[in-house]
Image 1 (cartoon, helix red, strand yellow):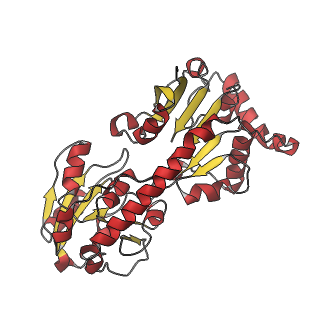
Image 2 (cartoon, one colour):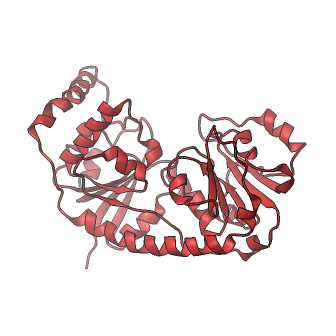
Image 3 (cartoon, one colour):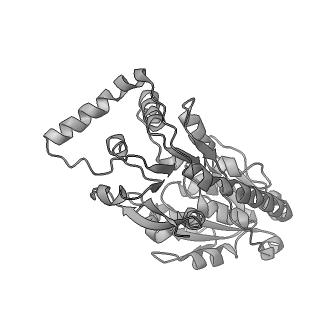
Length: 345
């Protein structure tokens, strides 16, 4: 039987990180997938995408004026919490009302997305992604802390380093690779090198196999951002029995259920990490990983059936005036000859 065609819209950098591949694998069981990699200020190939019956958005999403031009399409969106930025609650409310009118189905990988949607009637699915556990018993043998940090320029070195007792740290494997527009505090790093045993990874890019091999030599993973859509690197670490230290926000605080699994912090945290929670609870994290993976395997089976159902559009007459601002903005852009078929952050 010939598979249905599906357009998979993804952010251009994921072409290299392959962050959305776990969903591609699920969808590929039912659909023939064509990838569209969006990059800022590039024209959206609307007509080509519109030729597909099924459309899946990972992370990115087109403006409402474009989305409502898709007619009789079955569309699903997997938004990332860290990218859902609204000016205020009013604009957030308008956005989700627009989604309810379009009948878009939503995959929610964070409880914060559920909170953001609020009371709008949107066909959605709560998911907690997890990797198949691949346990590294070598971690169990470490009596001291071997810390792996991928510094993306999002969290100050001292913010996480001050959580540890210096004498309990054996080494810090340090991979400085900042996100676009972010910087590493090189001066502070040079100062800390004199106090701690740093192993510097001097590469512009780490392949997944290199990343995993580095993890095998460490028992602590520092989650590199203050907000995560999913935090796949963090999930990778937990699935291998590592102790995860992350900022107290989604999705870190949704995976780190207690201090045997990891530790969450913010700018006001005064407590230190108890190293015994790292070295003595490998088996506890192992059981947690098995349970989490089993739950994910059950949840993921609901994705395709949700995508295939007919769109449920909520049409309330009193919603229409709320969208007038968007229509005015669209008209102004058209009059000024600005190509509206760009994705707008």
